[in-house]
Amino acid sequence: MKDNIAIIFPGKLEHLPPILNAIDYFNSINKTVLLFVYFSEKTNEEKLLTKGNQVFSLKLDKYPVGILNKIVSQVKFLKLVRKQVKNKSVETGIFNAAHSFVSFLFTQKYFSKKIIHCHEYYNRRSRLWKMQNFMVKNADWFVSPEENRAWLTRIDTQNTTPFIVIPNCNDFSYIENNLQNNKNITENRFIYQGLISKSRNLDRILDAFNKVSFENRTLILMGTGDNAYLADLKSKANDKIIFEKARPFPTHLEFTKNCKYGVLSYHEKDINNVYCAPNKLYEFAYFGLPMIFPAYPGLMQLNSEYNFGISYKPWDESSIISAIEKITKTDYAVLSAGSIKLYSETLKMRSNWNQIF
Image (cartoon, rainbow, N blue to C red; front, side):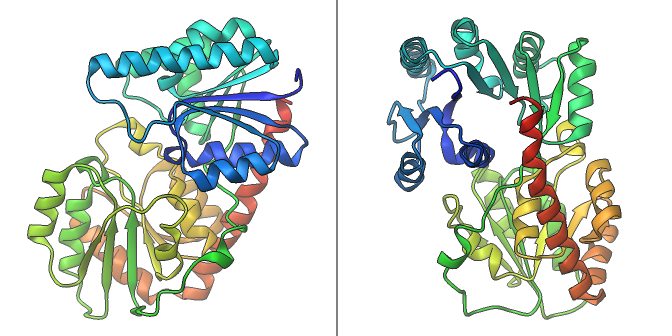
């Protein structure tokens, strides 16, 4: 199995969709994967197995709570990874985010090629930031979803570890025909999907949406997170705002497909948000949704190339209102075509893995 790949993530598989995207690409170039996770949805596991991959899981039904339970789970996971990679002599190990730090420390010696997939750019000087930087310094390659983040990581670590950029863009073509149509579509239906948290700037988005001048509008806020913050949002919402609980990947795309506009929203408080690389950008783009988005460097650069939406200043309510109103008056077909092109061109970047393999 020297030519095969171990992918290691001590968490729920569906919480990192880029892992599924990577496995799909590796299978397309005739490589099989040994996947190590805490737990995953049965349907995704079965799909991976039919392509010859192997899935090793702790088979948890939820994340461990409490320090003792977390330590016990980490030890069990480490033993699982060590046993399999040692016995199967897998050449390449891909460690996902700082959460796989313990596995990296104790199993890196079994791999001749070590890759760190940096899904997040953690707040500087934080524990996770230090852990991920240590991993990058001791890896053969690292992967970033966005080029600015890659260079920031290179500067932080002060080393020459080479990197590739693989955007968080999944191949959704296999699920589109299975989606159920939502018959209750309003003409100007906007959707936000993701974490419900102050870090996502949703209070400003909601306040702006409440004050938009035209009536024919709906905003869906879909996700879970900070319950107190969610309760505060609900207390401020008018009848144009609809709250939906999070759906497991990929069933949440039933809602995406049947909306007209996408909403990307991040607070300007930290560098991870300013250099965001959201999955949702490409999920919206796959279905041809024009988007409103914060005027951050990476998103502005992409929009200048593909023209998929309207930017706004995330700290300025009037700017958000203006973006909402402007996008409904802009040629929909032009922006939708820009979204679709963004998706199709970005998906090709999966071939950047070939620089490593």
